[in-house]
Length: 238
Figure 1 (cartoon, one colour):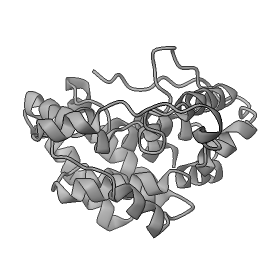
Figure 2 (cartoon, helix red, strand yellow):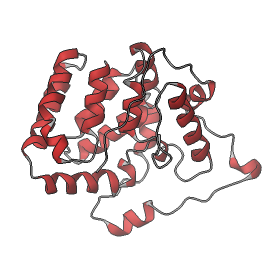
Figure 3 (cartoon, one colour):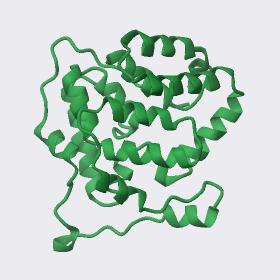
Figure 4 (cartoon, rainbow, N blue to C red):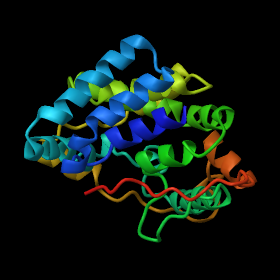
């Protein structure tokens, strides 16, 4: 599954000339392992064709409008479970520690919950572990797929592939809870401003009991790095 995870990671990075030129290699990687269901692979091939043949500036504009401008489509996992709450900082620390224990070194400027980076890390882990860890945020991935479906976006299929590869399938109630949150259109500036307003940070007893997502609990447990696993650098975002 290593090559497939790397391929899906690349598909979720900011479109560049290098990404366009790598479309053939990405398609080959997906074919080689053949772990993605055929119906989903067909969608991945269509997205790859768009990336390979589309105008670069149009592809970049599409990416920004989807993933950078719209909070509900953020490619940062903790955005969907913690927002701007204080739990997010600890979750970042925990995830960074998990990467380091697994042999993946990232710079201080990189946010560890960025989905392409998360997939790069999973590509360095044994398949069983990668399947398990991918299952923890499966409800987030499923919600992103559904929001992209409503926008008729070709990127939907990447998240469908990730959900298909996860060991644990997302619970409907968890997905529904995320889909009930505001999901403004990228052209609705007033709604976007409201969605991006900072959430209040609470302290003391009212702050709650911290991270509740299963992934973050597993992160705190820590893992030993697999022998011989080299550090992998994520693909450049721009």
